[in-house]
Amino acid sequence: HFLMAYAGKQNKRIVERLRSLGANAVGLTAMDGGLVTGRRKPDIRIKEGEKTKILHDDHSGTIERIDPQLLRLLLEAGYLPVVTPPAISHEGVAINIDGDRLAMELASALKAERLLIFADTPGFMRDVDDERSVIPVIHLDEVAQIAEYGKGRARVKLLAAAEAIRRGIKAVGLLDGRGEHPLTRAFEGAGTWVTG
Image (cartoon, rainbow, N blue to C red; front, side, top):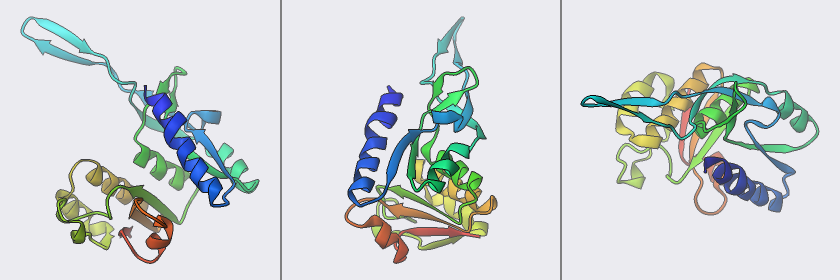
């Protein structure tokens, strides 16, 4: 179940690591305190001959509203919030939302200057089979053309980065979360930086 995967393992693993490094991290889901409200995607109807089958979704949804008040309180009190899906629907049901879109929406709501998105790749690559083909800087006006190189999650991350830039964030890093000291490597220029 997605709720247990995000809230239970992933979030707490990140909090544990940050706390071991001295950060005053606290783990939240996007539904805590009404932080993120969204709409559950409808069931899909599939027509097979004369029969119509209903494919029930995996409780996935889209973000509709951000209320950053809880995050502001935590930040002002010296905490480092770690926020992962799920969000809450208008009907009060947990919904799975895209983590990259969540990060972009939260950064935008908090008027952040930078957004860092970590993944298991060294950045946005021109050739998905060649880790040396990382594109170090992508300007907003190049995103549509360069996005054609991306597949799956890489393309989604690039498009979320572009949306963040359009909303006023100055730079978005698409960064390698593998190995030692990913944050230090990011600020030394590793990965891909999307800018206006």
